[in-house]
Amino acid sequence: MIESDVTVLDMEEEFRICPACGYKDGFHSMFRRDGEIMKWLFICPSCHKIFDIGLKA
Ligand SMILES: [Zn+2]
Image 1: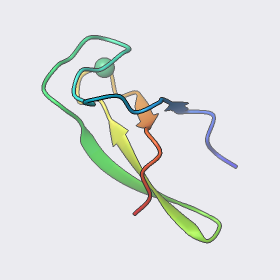
Image 2: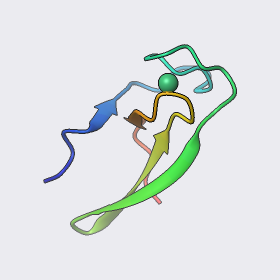
Image 3: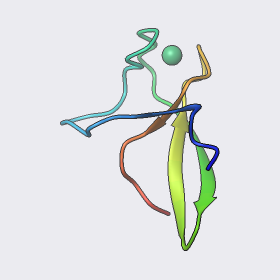
Image 4: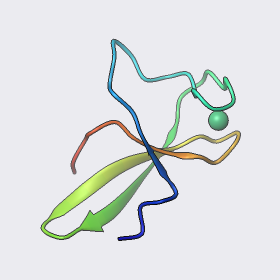
């Protein structure tokens, strides 16, 4: 597992503002294979932290 760089969040009404740095114009997407599933992750364009809100590709 190479997920220690990923912050797992509970999805609320909207995921637009970075909880780490406050950047508020959305995220870049990335994908990472995790066994049989492909996780859909989001990278903050400002602080480059990676977030997992539970989406799978
Ligand atoms: Zn950020």
